[in-house]
Length: 107
Image (cartoon, rainbow, N blue to C red; front, side):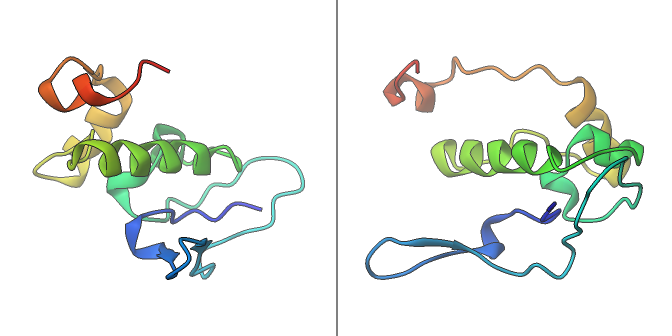
């Protein structure tokens, strides 16, 4: 199963701090082969989704972007257009040297 739209809006946390992933409207069961629809929230999409050839591992990328965003308060790949976001996701090297990362454990 590929959720294909992991982002902050689709994560709910209750009063007991239980985390629930919601909104499976874009999800797709993948049994073999690749998915081709370029679908989801661009700021959280993997380069493979932008290329139109991906599998359920695209959700791992989106989760990584979400965790990055939660830790440092901004997205790792931004842009002024969809094309720029895609290029940054494909090519930008992330740096973990700025001030916010000093309080995060190396592991």
